[in-house]
Picture 1 (cartoon, rainbow, N blue to C red):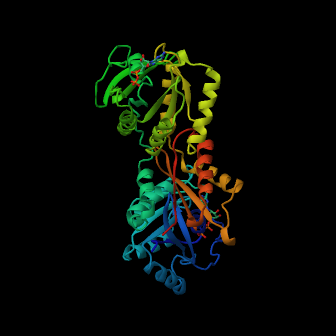
Picture 2 (cartoon, protein in one colour):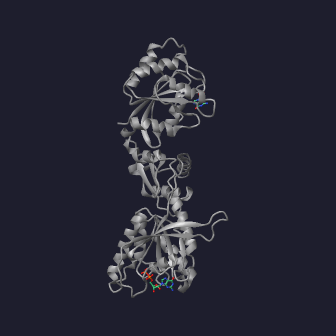
Picture 3 (cartoon, rainbow, N blue to C red):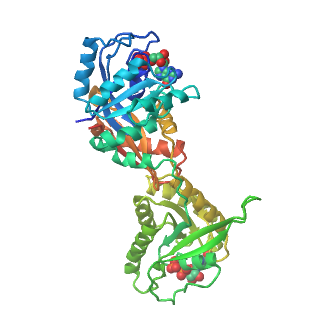
Length: 459
Ligand code: GDP
Ligand code: GDP
């Protein structure tokens, strides 16, 4: 059962406007004339993924502060009995009226939890009314502009403790929404270099660190666990006001397992090593060997990294000894796009661990890709994109009944996760899901980042 929230307030405070805002349709009649009589309306509302039924009452329709018409009041009383919460709306621009005070008095005697909403609070004109409304004894008001859609996040915050647990489909989204504005500094870039044996991982790490820390070469024969090495990379292309120092925590996996004689086992180990590195890493560089090209094993590692939701980059190493470099590059580009259908256009770099070629560009890109991997799209921008995407390519109508996708919210970052709410989702073809994912990636700046989309029907 969906929680039910009832909207109460004297005429003209903006109840219908709020109802429309929450339900997302121009259903209710909005009129400047006070006292326009309406029927009680119900609708499915969603705020940041939290779903509930909203009820707009026609109660309290009398402008005379001294009388409360019994018929109207009874209707409101009936509505409130089944409600899980009440939103009591006042007009912050007009300030409190005796009728507001009377409704407040009545509400304080009811059992239903009340959220006080100070509507029309956009701009400065509503400030005094917001403060005045504390005197109603209904707790802290939520300043809102139903007309302009401002303050909806705060409304969510006020409703969540009351009805949130009943709306568990949105729990993840809610947690995420609650963290909005919390700037989590990204810290050192956690970077792992993975790849098949002999791709040049140890050589590359030595090159980056500028010291001969790891044993390389066919004779090495040592086994190590993955360890983290903290160091500072200086970006030579940093702007004039930026010293360019970037902190990196390099995850040094045991690619470093130099048991060259057991090739088959080694192949398996390189996947196991990569898996372990991925646990620690934000960005993973899959190192290829220019003399070997892209092999099945590489795709397997790449696929695992993406499955785990990490940002992935590909670097073709040993570029100093590559033959036919341009056809090699294009061949690998094409094979990646074909082999990893879930992410097109992965960042691809030609590097040489031996000469240092391409390494600064690769590291700069690693920082950039982490930014998008950690990025949060504001809900408004997200739904603007969503509406466009629905219009450009509406969901299909299998059996003549259209699948409705109504709303999207970002439920997390690192990797970016989204929840799409709609109905008849079980009939949505995977091709359409793919369309959504690709469009998110393309239009919201998540190129080459694994993006998760979950579909949910309101319970
Ligand atoms: P209700 O019938 O009492 O619930 O109120 P309505 O939703 O019909 O709104 C009454 C009037 O207030 C309409 O002219 C709305 O356009 C206006 N209104 C509603 N919300 C806002 C708001 O947030 N800011 C401003 N400035 N006007 C609003
Ligand atoms: P790992 O098993 O992935 O750690 O690979 P190593 O770092 O041990 O390198 C394997 C072999 O490739 C060694 O002989 C390296 O000297 C060689 N190698 C690594 N990077 C390069 C490179 O950029 N160019 C060339 N020509 N050889 C490289």
